[in-house]
Length: 153
Length: 153
DNA sequence: CTTTCTGCAAACGATTTGCAGCAGC
DNA sequence: GCTGCTGCAAATCGTTTGCAGAAAG
View 1: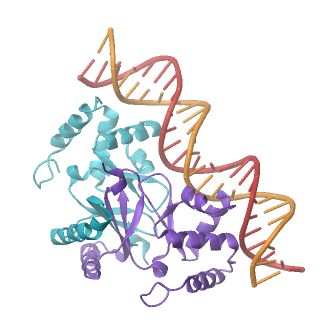
View 2: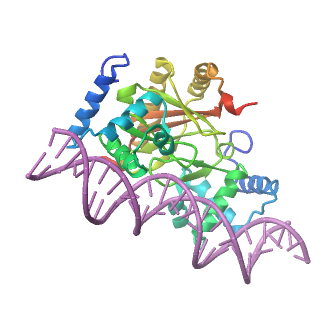
View 3: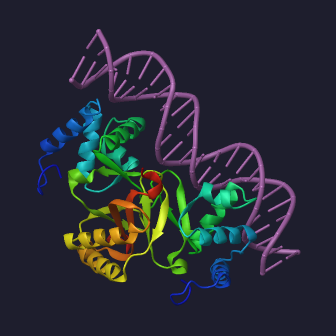
């Protein structure tokens, strides 16, 4: 998140987003603000159809274009779901490090947090496993696959 | 892998693939065999363009169609890369459990294996983290992100 | 022989883009 | 007021599909 471990206020979030856009000579327009609000409130990666369903008066093309801009500005991230639609979420330095739980039946993605010790163990193992490949690890992703409660009898 | 912890011979692989296809009333044709060979030899997830570049005389549509069939037969798996192309690899019960190292610059995906202890720790943590969501975990994916040796100075 | 597969070309659907007018700063 | 953004509609690109002939069992 923007600072410390708290959630940060909505104002802090928007200020930071505005700053990152400004550094790319981009403006923080109402459409972009709406996208950030929706992503922040969802708390999980959203598909474009989901985003469009949650915002009024923003056409697809603008949503696509601005999500791309937000990604370039380091404000958002594109994550690959199990289905055909791309998904978007706020960048981890705005929301905190987390992972995803993916339902293999309905494709829904939910955020989940894991113990810091495990994260550290994983990072150490990652370094060890890739050292001989000459690969420089900068981050990781963990997806848990399974069936969500709605998709079980 | 097919049995035990060894690599298994190529013959064993093809026999098993043929068996799985047969159980769906599907035939093990030369195009399908070529796809399995390419995926097995690559040892990492391949995009369709990559696959087509490695096989002679197989048109796109056949590749797409047969990769879909192989996925349905449990012989192959589709993995989401960081770029726009879908990637395919052999199923884990044929190749062994592994994870992916993804270069965020060129998008290349490489296989990597991590220590069993860590896998177990992760599985335990996954159960714990999702129990309260009513989510039934059936598997996991770990992607290590970074820069490959070719993409660094 | 019967059923499934192949190759082609046309169809599809998600995402991108050109352009004329509107809006941030 | 200059520069960048929006909305529309057309274009693009990966992927899927219908169909007639070839091939597997």
